[in-house]
Length: 171
Image (tube, rainbow, N blue to C red; front, side, top):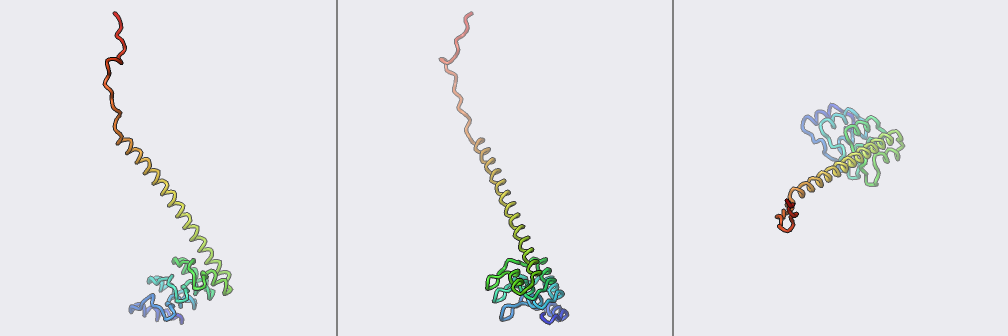
């Protein structure tokens, strides 16, 4: 896929070639297509279900490959498909860090913006889960209180005693 031969890549995929086959360095066809900036090949591989977050032996992902070579169209494709911008390579760098290191401020911005949106969405999801958990706990508490109230024995009735009766009126 590094040479950009979409017809060859499509033919190989139709013949059953593995989407996620890795080279001795752990690189995949998606990583090569991303590194060399071939959006049609990247689209074909993604459409067939290539794993976009596989990491090479050095921790690189397809998103990092595209970021390294300043391929904004491919970066946008991968992010739109759900690539994880928070993954780190062997040096602890994310795709945004890689783009910045190689001088692509625009790509670094795209990746950082996506990572921030992912973090905000995760925070909102966690907040909603906490609210739902609190609602469930409150409902469980009310149900337990209601069950305890129903299970409590009724108060014992005391038979009237003769000494506790008021005196009869005189006629």
